[in-house]
Structures are given as structure tokens and as C-alpha cells.
Image (cartoon, rainbow, N blue to C red):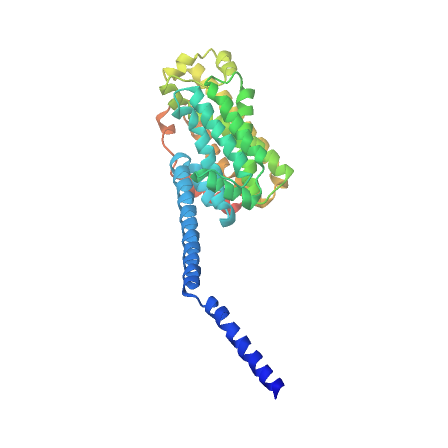
Length: 331
């Protein structure tokens, strides 16, 4: 009997001890805190998604307005590489417009230092709160992009702040290799490709693009009394910087353009010599060859008059040609 009473007493004691614990578990304040924490995490996730979409749109709009051909080329890439390609091109645009947007070299150097620091922080998973940096960080994490190529683009753009003409064609080619070719190497990484033949082709396409970009920008630079064309070729044909600033259409000026354009064509031919060994998927990183071919064809039709009015307008058929080339997977 005593044992039974003891057991009942123990059972009652254990039940009594459960009440505070049960009360603690269903405490209204605890429920409120958990609910608030849940709402806060949902809001944080929603905010992060919204920020990501804003950053993506910023890069898309920037590339569309400042590098339309690159914008169209990016849209033709596979979905998993498209957003990263736009981030890389937005990064390239940001650097390219530094030279024209600053009045003093010191300010330009400060902008370049910002990007050098930003790249280091991106690879530490601490990107600056800036749209292009955030999108670049996303691309780096997704595709394990090589930091060396990003820093090489910045370093070369920084050297270009000196605002002088290229001494010779080789100097222009080196600039193109370190900027345009480096960008194409990164695009290949976005496509998941590491191939020595693709890299060789990318090197030549980048050089061709740098040369063509220099030619295409000549009327704009001349209007601002600046000339960046290689001095050795200008001297060879007796063309002065003043001839370009005046927009001269004399034969010696055309001869300078012919020589420079011919070198771009040579690089395109060299790039195509690797086509049989380049993976088909890599061709999507080389779509810019369509744009280069179009300009070289039009400048030839204008008899190498870089100031011809027909060269001022964008060819409306280029987007269609880009699509066809992407479908054929050729360059």
C-alpha cells in the first residue's frame, strides 16, 4: 500500500513538473519572437532577390546603351552564361568610359584603384555594394573566373589613361590583347571551356577587335582633337595628327586606315585557322567576329575613308547575322 501511494505521488510530481515546461514551450512571447524572426528572414530574402534583380537590370541597361553589339551577343549565349556575360561586359564598359569621363588623370587613377580593390574584395566574398561589382561577384562564384584576366584589363586601361597615340601597331595589339582578348578568355570560362586552340583564336579575335575599335572611334576622337592611331604607320604615309583632326579624306589618310584595317583582317584569318580544333561551344564567345567583318567590309566599300558618313550608322542587319552565326556555331 505504501509502495502504491509512493508511485502515485511520484506520478503526480512528474505531471506537475511538466506544466512549467509545457507553459514555456507555448509561451506567447516565444511564439511572437519566432514569428517575427520568420517574417524578418522572409523580408531579407525578398530584399536580396530584389537587389539582385536591380543589379542585373543595371548591367543589362548599361551594356545595351554603351555596347549594343556585345549586348546582342550576350543574349545569344546559353542561359547559364548570359547573365555572367552581361556582368563582364558591364565591367568592361565601366573601365572603358573612365578615360572619357574624367578631366584629370589623377581622378581616373582613383577610379581604377577602386576597381582593383573591388576585384580583391570580390575574391574574398566581400563585394562592394555596387551593381556591377555585385554581378561580377556572382559570375566569379558561379564560373570560378580567373582573377588574373580581370586585373589585367584594369591594369591596361590604367596605362591607357596617359592619353597619347600608340607608338606603333604592336603597342596597339598589346593593348587589345590585354583588354579585349582577356574579356574573351573570361567569356570562354563562363561557357565552361578551357581549350588551348580556343585561347589562340580568342587572342587573335581580341587583337582584331581592339584594332577595329580604334578605327571606329577615330571620327569621335578627332572631333575632340585627339588621335590614337599608331604613329609609325601615320609617319610612313606622311599623315599628321592634324590631318585626322581636320577630318581629311586625302589618299595618305586612307592609306593609314588601309594598313591598320588590313592588320585586323590578318588577325581574323589567323583566328579562323584554328576553327577545326576549336570546340563548337566556343564559337558563341566569338560572335563579335560578325561585327568586325561588317565594319571592315563597310570601310573597304568606302575606300578606307574612315570619315565616310555611311560608317556613322549601325548596320541594322547585324543582329540577324549574329543570330545566324550563333545557330551555325561558326566564326
